[in-house]
Length: 280
Figure 1 (cartoon, rainbow, N blue to C red):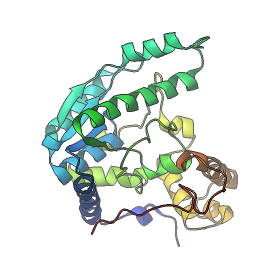
Figure 2 (cartoon, one colour; figure 1 turned 30 degrees about the horizontal axis):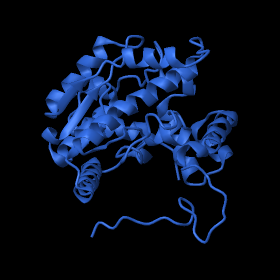
Figure 3 (cartoon, rainbow, N blue to C red; figure 1 turned 180 degrees about the horizontal axis):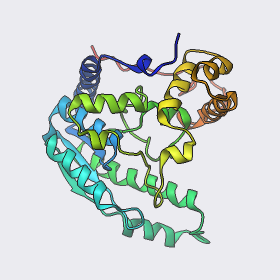
């Protein structure tokens, strides 16, 4: 197997069809009134929003725009609104600044210099707003995370991955970008630098210390049980880079699983007591 960019190519028409069927069936099976998602102005949320609209109709998709003072950029709001217009979504603007300040001020000995804790509060607060609208309007929450960031654990636990469905999560970032172009999302937005927007000027590739084009090929190889030295040789990079990616992938498994429980009974919820949802 050769690790070249072409290995990530897919029939994106078929991908669109399968994801849209998945979304539509889930909404119908849960008897929900529609979907709610956060629309940030980034590529992952734009793609998820487009797929949701194509699956159940834009009138049944509520996109929440969730700006806050510290990271707000008009360009992001403009991009989010452009996607909402293109795919005929309902929108609701929710400035979460006041809610965040209320949380910060209510925590004893809150340390405003702890950027990670502050950022994670933002991600979890966004999800509070999404689930409020889901609960009050009988909607399901659609997550927007992609496979690259999910495998790397590059997300906030119980934050941006807290959702009912995640239509992008089996697509690497490179594939999400190509699917976005297939869906008609403007190229400028499809190639826009990714950011969780948890603090000013945050960029995903800077924090991951690698370009997505390379990261995705490394992850693709690891997913298929290739040895780190083989991946490094094919991509002409240092093996230490691959080892670092593999270590982070494995170390963050706890973020991708339900909380562990000790094995005491005959069948344990979440471990060996899992009931499939039949769609027939």
